[in-house]
Length: 591
Image (cartoon, rainbow, N blue to C red):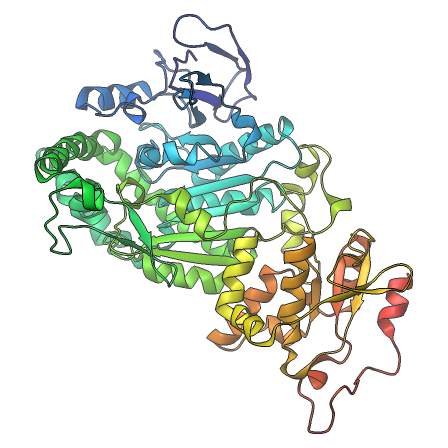
């Protein structure tokens, strides 16, 4: 596959033999990548064009360029690498980017299959990630499972050539959100570390589009009328005014994004000097230019989704949503759901809250006023949303250094091969990725721990090897693994949050709590939230098996032998221990 500079390089092919690629020297503006492939079950296309989208990088996409890309995107589904333009430093010298030093992000497209809707996010995301996109050609008829298999093979190939501590992210938009969940479940939490879902189509069965009447209507529209379908559906994809707006996104206190638009707030601002906005004539000209940019994108939908392709994609949505529903409770990765509150295509806001309750470790970020095409809206920056949610980790850090992979291929054995076994029982604790400091801070704010620290001012002391007590946690033996921290509960167990957060903040270690089994069988929303927090920070049900496995993995565990009785002590029982007569945990640790 020939690739020009700033183009999309094909990385992985379809269901045939693995692709082998090599880079040839630069000639002119770009490089050529030659891919040799064995025999494939798929027929070879008669004329294969370069699979790239000039509109991804051009400031003003044209109708002809988009159509050229769609027609040239033949062949099997494949993973592509968008190459960002070179950057200059302060001396106007070109800076060589080293994307291999960044976390890997695989971006999965919506029902269009082109990945174009995410292109507006590429410049910001490429600053923090080595990007890959997934192209599903218009004429392709791969099943959901076949698409998942292609993506899993692609991730396996990437891991074979990646450093051991390189995080792998999967970002899925709409239908891509379904694929992201299935890929994460198939690969396991060591091969795929974090998942971002943008208006995921897991709610498709709850939308009107999943009904037989709607499917029959969409697929039986006369060809003459189908020409106007994209313009009829465009209000459901998003507010056109927001799609071409120039304003930026501000975050409000409840974790959602709010667009600050001068026109919407009724303010007439005509000078840049006071508020940073351009003059009214410049704003009007900019508005018109962005409107012209939007029109060919909307018009191209009928080329991306001809009627026979739309019918196939709707069946994929139905099948994929059912498959994703089965794996929702078993996905072990950290998941961030970004949902628009004005999605008129599927109930994304409601679905985000459902996913948060259903999945093991899931946080949500609502974008006020955003529609289904959230990633195309000019005032939305997915990279900033991830950063503020604490969802960006430049390196893979695990709870047990001894279990950290030494090379990328070590993560394959802990990935797809063990994913099914890990789903069988909750009584099988695994090594986890450490939460980021921002994730810790947000949870501490939600639980009131930040305010409690300001009110109580807890102080830590540690004892060194010579028995000397000193302030702080410098003498805490965080490198001695495995390690058992045995403690007594204070009233209402308020000490738990202080201990977990203190060790993470000051020593960068996560003490895996052994919690009462009832925590993991919630009966109401509040209990479900507590379970999610406990799971997010590595807690597991207190059993001899769990304790033994955590110690064998070289973990730090936190144990309160007094349990709930000690946390709910009566009057005049201050500093009274309620530990069992036989210290079973000592015998387990000795083994």
